[in-house]
Image (cartoon, rainbow, N blue to C red; front, side, top):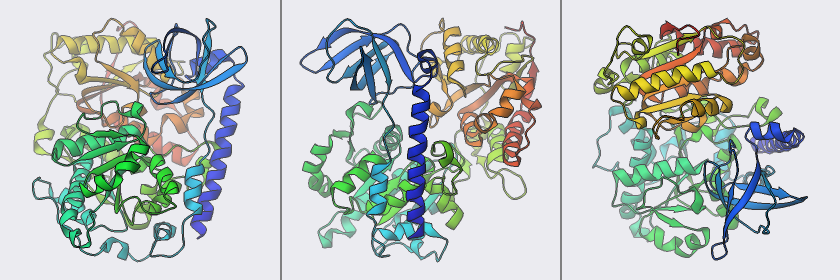
Length: 585
């Protein structure tokens, strides 16, 4: 299987690049590592619970990238100790692990990168026979006959209790037919999770009846690259079908925001209860990483009859090719125009450095959901023409009548003031254009402008939960957080990547950079199509770009980067431009 061999080579390149990046990062000064979010300095122990093994540490400043459930390394006096990050709240961290007592300050750093061993083992264990797990690899090898879309015997019907639009219903019908490999593209707000939930329920529910003669229940497994994506889909299933049993397997620390009705089980508990869960028709959720680990423990035997992969646009092709070891039917849900998998260094330029969803799209095409229920007509059309165009350049996306008519619900105070002009319901997309120059990854001026906009929105009747503030740069996140420190809690301020999957009534995006030369050097990062697509599609009725006029002055020689910049500028050109002087804030 040539594809498998090429993917194994890609894994080797990616592992080597991650190790090299880690070594390079460790060679930086501690100050730089802290600023870039890879370390926390001068942590001190303030509490310890011997019964639970938890330890509380506090520091003066925490601007790290760490997340709940991460393994981090604490170092002091030449000794290092890996611990699990249970929780954190600003400068307070709660960890669990073997840590000696003492008053010494601790340095917290990210653990060394783990190699892709689970994916590698799964690929190496794939059998080439087309009737077993090797069939998925063969389907991903090259485009061939589309008989894999015909499904397995005894196709099922869609659950009758929910209304779907025409394209959603067609996609669901294809998926419940249990094809060996199938994919659907659901752009922002088009009901991707709704369709995936419907398919999961239809298979888990009606499968009980169809397969009862064989004394088997149809086992449905929901996986994704991240815990957050798994949790989101399980929550959607619970909301739509509260009678259906659901269960999340794995790290208890990654169950934040998971509905209370979802059963939480450790891996050991899952193995003990697996047969009972299947007999009850429960839908099981776990990360793709854990699913591959369980498959390895099960000697490569399938862990389900159908696997539903959410946010499949983030799943690397190598991981996707290994999915055949998990189930005979693999259903992919995602968006190839949203954030892709992360490859390190030279691995990113490999011909196979793509998501499994993109590979299926290239070979066979994807079912497409064209109707959004989130954004109004102006925002939908702008995003559609920039990132979802048809062959004539028109938008493939359209908003429902109800969504299209929505306008920003704000009470204006002074329609002549630049802030109220920017917040006018008549202009869903606005570029608050500064004359700033020479900034790289942070801008205090833009942060003060955002403070003005946010203050007026709250005065105009919006709740803090209605507002999201995004930026590509962590330094600008910190700048905005500091500038908005006097605001009531609830306004979301984060990098674009961290708010994928969320939405708000109003979204403010801070470009922060105003140096054309720096932008040209870092164009691959800044003008990334998926990043700006995510940023622009979070807002329902208001999208405000805050950035310098220099954004349109970047000169790029690379054709692909120039095309990405052109799509970014397509969005900005749809905006009503409001030029503000340096003292506008």
